[in-house]
Length: 77
Image 1 (tube, rainbow, N blue to C red):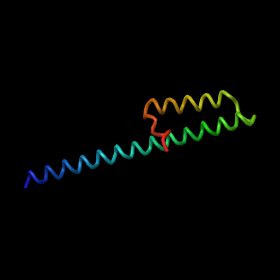
Image 2 (cartoon, helix red, strand yellow; image 1 turned 45 degrees about the vertical axis):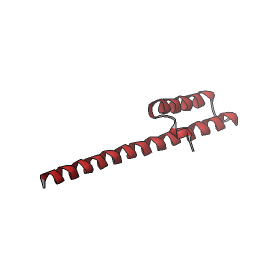
Image 3 (cartoon, rainbow, N blue to C red; image 1 turned 60 degrees about the vertical axis):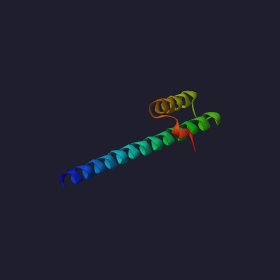
Image 4 (cartoon, one colour; image 1 turned 180 degrees about the horizontal axis):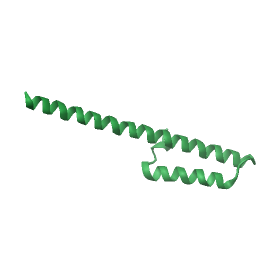
């Protein structure tokens, strides 16, 4: 009986770990999407004369930093 409970506990722990990993992935994906939107908005504003090049550069650097940390999954559709 103890062996069964130990195995059940291990499986539950693996499930929790996998769930946390998936949540982290989804949160990183959302954050990357937000950064990509910010870059697009900054670029659009710059091209239409209402934004500054340094704002576009900051948005690009933030996105590149996120990609370096979490990968380029945010760039895939």
